[in-house]
Length: 492
Image 1 (tube, rainbow, N blue to C red):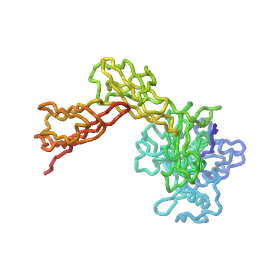
Image 2 (image 1 turned 60 degrees about the horizontal axis):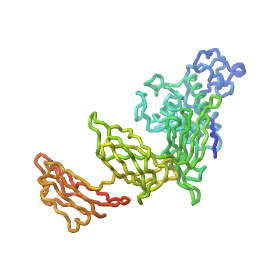
Image 3 (image 1 turned 90 degrees about the horizontal axis):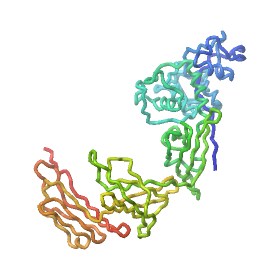
Image 4 (image 1 turned 180 degrees about the horizontal axis):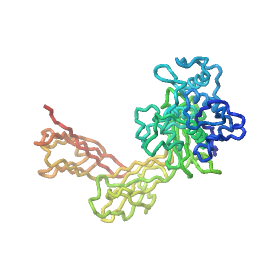
């Protein structure tokens, strides 16, 4: 099933100083806005739509700044936000007689603006570039990118508008005043605002927004994707006071291609419906505009599993020891594939490391014969998760015996085996050393105690013993051994 892209009109704000003169309205041209100006096209189009206006003398004054009150009026006009039955925000400097009162009150009620900390709104103050960024994102419900890390050196982390600025940058609506600066405290001009308004309007239709309530969920939970360069996923909340509540997600196209998307949700009521969705996301351009379509799927891809002898790493310039063959059997011993295709691990610092692929769930034994004559078995579990595109795999190198070497300088003293441990595994110690050799016999667990252990001179480590655990992986016994130790350093 395909869900075609949902287009939502997006805009920014601009000032309207006076009503547009009839001449300017007809031709949508201003003598002080020549076609050579980077904002000319935006100014002329918005003027022709009566979104912005010029002055009685026919000029637009593109270099004049915009006030916060003027910006509020334009935002409300652009978003068609109702201005009746609104709650008084009680800004000390915005009375009901103020020409911008209704617009300011409507935006305050929606949670777009808060005013200053002293109870003022500053309707006659010039709006800054940073303030503009935050208002654009909130008023027109554009994706809000959080926790930014980018190169505007003049936008510090404590700047309350930092996320808004970063969001405009990620959406391609601004590149800053230079590659490394944004000038957050500078006033935005009428010409700049017109261009930003048009740019936001153009970018919004290509963004797909999905709401948790559309799936009868309270919120989205896990959201993940592949091919991150095809699109961004931006989580958001419809409740301004709970910004981290994922009640909606935005899919922001970045390049043409196909990627995958999975997400789950918290049901709002008892339902038999699955609490996850899994899609292919197709991103393309149609007549210069972004188009996003979703294709629901149940596909699960072949999943890589890394077979590596733990702790075996390659020394400098050491030749890689390749596998001669790899066979795969079920844990019951039934042969699945006598010669499995394999490849080397991408991490070339690992020795004895190869990758095979699983396209089914189950528990398997992979037997690897290496070029140097060694043979190693790996126990692999492959688990299907219908809400993901890959199997979950867990690999355990099967150790038929274990050689455990504790630091040569450690003063372990004698080691004491508990009664009955010989039935689970034999534990021997090389004479005069701290090397222990363990061979499993049957499943079980015990602790080898070092009752006379002491801290060696020049060291702060004390060793208490060894935990030995024997388990059965398929038809094979596997031994695990770990040293129990701690730092016994005493501070004066």
